[in-house]
Image (tube, rainbow, N blue to C red):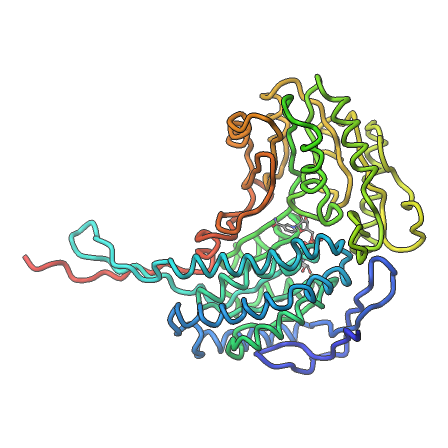
Length: 484
Ligand code: NAD
């Protein structure tokens, strides 16, 4: 199938890009070019912001009733649901996610988000009269924040677009999406579905481009709010620009989450769970729990069980339904992971599975060997820095207090899990770890509940009413006091 494109989706139309620059989408498995699409430039971003500005300042979208907007998003949701398989395939093609993960999460989770946001929007008091402290009612309205710049990363492209686009649309905002240069293809299908669903012209534009063009979008005076998911380094740069301009900003950033295995955990079930929470998307997940905390009493047992589990995982072609670990998205990411594997060895950690070198039978593609380090001290760089690949560190702890201390000894605070036979003990640990999300014997995100990070993992929350609130401004209208 020819996936090449020659137009950009700006202002509700397929337009000729401002320049001849192209993005070559390269298969991380074959290292061959699979598609060529326009690379957005600052001129394209200017056109997209101008369209969004006009649609916001003069167009119907922000002035429609919430119920009318909900109807359009419902139509979009139905169209999205019908194309999940196609969306999953595009994401596997462009960024190498194993097809099992694409069909489990990369495509269905965004659709589940749409449905969850619709449920929130149907119940939200968009305008309410509250009893005021002075005796008269106050009318409190939720109004759209304005033109939104939505900037996702490549690792879960639709997931991170949808968490911004859908609440923005429901609130009455207009949106410019800037997909990462590695993953423009899924966004083309998204544009088609939005168009078919009857989203008015100008309300959404999509311009895939690199970070300089992203920075131009962030600083653009026509943008009222920036919603970003990506690295903590880029998040800091974006936050400082938004701070200077007093723009609204929400940031979903990196993580270095810990999975705590308590002494009473059933190791067979725990390993099945850890396989997913630690290595989903080939380890390229912000919520990946790459620090495995095991008590000294059961340390060797946990290391052996994890080593056996990881060694048995199938590494290879992401299009193969049996594959559990695919390639890294790009050569630079493969090199980054290899650099950390070498660093772990220099720091004195012990490789029990994997290590540097190509996985057997794979003579091309940006593959690394899934690696488990034992004898890791939490202060080592491999335990503190986000590697963003299939590299796990098993860290010993003395008792539960020590496990909680180690889990919290991190610049990040995004996710975490505890594995135990005692649900109450698990909840107790969950309450003590300073992260925005946590799982007891599971890590299944629930899109009705807020998601986001403590500390360097971000600012703000996505999903649930809290996630929708990021796209509204609150207005209080005072009404006359009662006579007498
Ligand atoms: P990245 O920060 O390099 O890029 C993310 C996106 O921002 C890309 O579209 C990029 O082009 C753009 N960008 C980069 N610098 C920019 C700038 N100064 N101004 C505007 N746009 C800019 O991150 P990445 O390598 O693509 O993604 C991996 C990172 O994303 C990891 O750190 C991961 O933890 C994080 N992530 C976080 C979450 C979350 O919800 N917390 C989810 C997924 C990924």
